[in-house]
Amino acid sequence: MYSVPKLEDYSPASLDKAAAELLSALEAESQAAADAKAFEEFRNRWMARKNGILSQINDMWLKPAPGPSKRDVGQRVNALKTAAEERINAAQSRAAGSANDAKLKAETVDISLPGILRPLGVKHPVLRVLDELIDVFVKMGYSVAEGPEVETDYYNFEALNFPPNHPARDTQDTLFISGQEKRAQRDRLLLRTHTSPVQIRSMERLKPPVRVICPGKVFRNDAPDATHSPMFHQIEGLCVDTNITFGDLKGTLEHAMHSLFGSSVKTSFRPSFFPFTEPSVEVSISCPFCGGKGCRPCKQSGWIELLGAGMVDPNVFGFVNYDAQKLSGFAFGMGVERLAMMKYDVDDIQQFFYGDMRFLEQFA
Ligand code: FA5
Image (cartoon, rainbow, N blue to C red; front, side):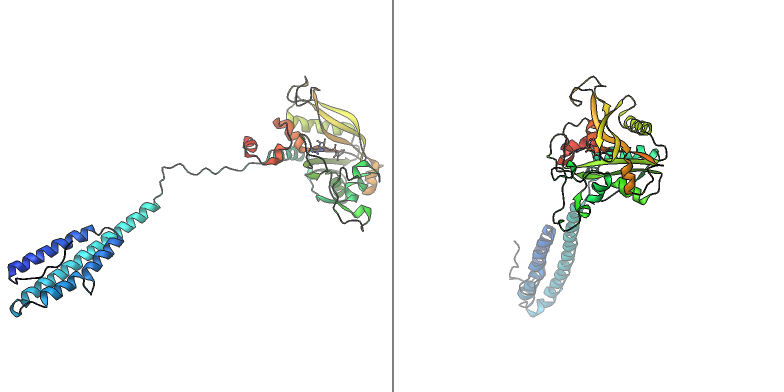
């Protein structure tokens, strides 16, 4: 590395030689100072007040020069200082440029790279079936009504004509809210076991004729298995008017099942019992997988039971001050998960609640 020599000879020729050596060292070091750190070192080595090369030539060349040579040495030292400043400025812009280049390079966006694919969310299969059914009934002139998931005993049981000791009121089926003992039986809170309370709430709110569907979550103290879940969805239907007959119920449910499963499915109505409908029925559809021949989903019977329904019991009209002499109506309640299981050939109801992406992605 260059170091400033002591001058023995102050003749113009040897002054020029010493100046030329210094210039070429300056040039080489300036070129080598490629980044900010190297530039800093380079500048300090040449410009530092104490012991920088430019100070050294002042002290070692100019100060000791004999009187007659002072002018020659001074001119060269000044020229060298000017040259050094130029090289330092040039090196500074090169170093800044390289820092800028590095910054730009780091920030470069490669627009030829494929983008990050963000998976789009889709409707959950249960909500899909729910919305599809709502659509079918809205087209038939029904409106949508909702009710609370935490219900009173009155709406969930009493106004629906459940006698005081009906087994459905038992803690075996119903999830009661604790600490309700001080309240009257009818005001005690529970998680609704079906969407039927919304029938009562709707009739309290509306004058007949009434056509409502009531979708929502319901809760039962059922142990989870392939067809039971402690939380599931129901969609309730209620139609009240003058001259509503069982034929209207059959026609309405047949139309809904055809819309959901295709026009080739058949419906079957078998007698059943619900306290709030009389007569009551269990409705099954012919198995959409085997067409009624018998297969695994329909347990070889050719039929799949989907919902409960019936004609509104006149006692229920009594609770909402509807005139049971003039009015008649039908109601039904479907388990939405069970419908979704049929529609999408899902053999375990729990799949709807695991949140397993491998299952859910099939509906994307
Ligand atoms: C009822 O809940 C009546 N409220 C239905 C009704 C409404 C009848 C209006 C008459 C008039 P049920 O307990 O059968 O009925 O339940 C209705 C449907 O809910 C069943 O057909 C089934 O599809 C579904 N379901 C019942 N329990 C469960 C469960 N633990 N998990 C998933 N789905 C269930």
